[in-house]
Length: 219
Image (cartoon, rainbow, N blue to C red; front, side, top):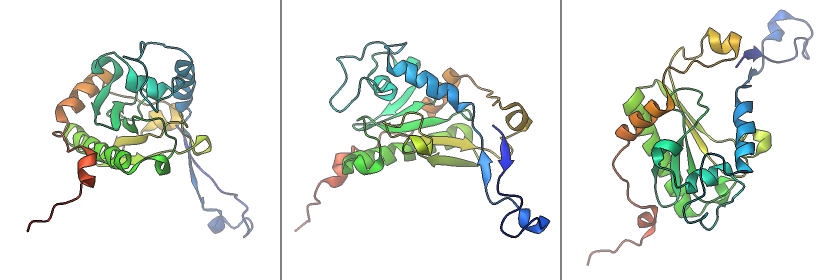
């Protein structure tokens, strides 16, 4: 990944050096191309995920790699699924930006937040909150990147299936290897990250539907 300053050096104000200050930083993430290519390949074959246990569930897409991960019969240690609730799952990103980088996504194949049902939206953010808590306990980061790329033009590697990235960050975690060599140095294997986060995951949260049950007023 290279960080380069953007903006027209001439600009509307001419070649004045004071007016040449960059208006926008551009974040080059060429390492993501491998993820996009491999995700596309996996979406057209069973790959290493195995046949879905009992088949894909209603609302899932057999051509979507994330749906196939969610429906895989393999154990969590092989799929890196950290936790699931009724409507969402949390899974490690196999091409992480930093150690502990994980994704939270709905179980159903939907492309955007406005396609979620109320219960699915609650389930997604409930799991995202638990993910942040687990990352904080396991890694003690200085902060987090939490967000989604919605649509191909916005940078989504799998644009048909909404997913939130949860990335722990530390001061100085972008070093010369990232800036000059376009490489990330990850000090921890995925299996180790999986075990650390699984051990740090919070206790079970209430099912999302419970939040929508009408409250019974006491007489």
